[in-house]
Length: 518
Image 1 (cartoon, rainbow, N blue to C red):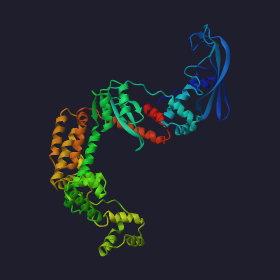
Image 2 (image 1 turned 180 degrees about the vertical axis):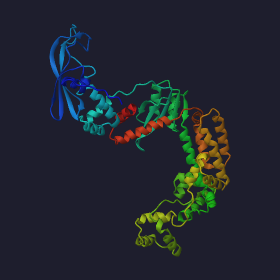
Image 3 (image 1 turned 45 degrees about the horizontal axis):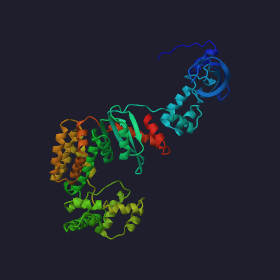
Image 4 (image 1 turned 90 degrees about the horizontal axis):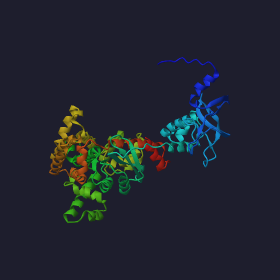
């Protein structure tokens, strides 16, 4: 670090060093008033330009005092009282007089210097209203939250061209109630615009007003896809690869759960055989009995008083055993008393849960009766703990093989060999993973992969391929082109931080402005 030796010869030179940002003014005196420092200054006796006609004038009509705040010094507020001139315009027919301005120091109608305003803008751009005011107060800058927000809204957002490649994604203004849409440049990651909702009409209108877009990156939203098709029929739609992989992960988990009866036996982990399991098996027989009689799914749901999606889930299972699951185990306050509960229930299967609650409470149980009800009804007290959960098995199937340990490889091979469907599932996932690296040959590979999956007995994976077919063009573009919606997701992450920072008090215009400012 280089240290420059500056020797101050008199007080006036020190004033010019401390208040160098006010150099266009002529400082008359500096007054120390304790909590604040007051400067009295005047404008130089130069000619000024009329703001209407542009003519120069040095003829003084009168004087006027302006009081503005400047950047703090020594943790004290600085007030500058400037005497400005009112000049006479020499042009006939123009306004009679005008007040001179000091560019770079004072702006019209402002009560702060330009350099203080720039500091305030930097703070409110990061912290907005209340938080920004608290920080500015600590820095000896007096400001109300309303003035802080007005200052923030006066910051002009960047004006950019409509890019060739854009990314579109939605974010929640109020989760499950109101959503908005953010649009960015997918190549430079610059924010382009924020729309007040996520409807197809709003996006279509924006795309028509901004021609020139050739490629649109999006997630799997059918609403966005329809808007793009209507407004830009020739544009290339790119489905985000992460969302495609995420959908496959959810599908793989569903398939693993559906085959619990196969791989759980390999680990000698018994399936849950409690009251809920018996009810599940009875419902499966009821649903398939009605379907065998030619009854439709909706009528089955009405007769059995079940949800339609529940009936569909039972109808997809070709065997009743596929509806059984490995018991879920999570840490519970009842775990230390599990053996006592098993012993008492084996001695007296009809023992009331309330009696068990009183017994283990005397032994030190600190949970509630409702917790014990769930613990027993979910089979946690009956079956042995499984060595592996469906989610963990699905995670191993979806993990890059190079990242698995040797024992995990052995366990995975043992579990996938439990039944032909699990083997086919592992093979399908392994064949699909290389498609996530964009390549021109991925289109043909995807077509072959879909045909291979449809030949296997994997109902959930069949549903995944039907979803790919509905948006096949965008999926192929996502697997062959280098574009993705990742930058848009990154902007959404920052958007959520901004929204949480304002705690929902801000309206959409302010939120949009802060998003565009970045």
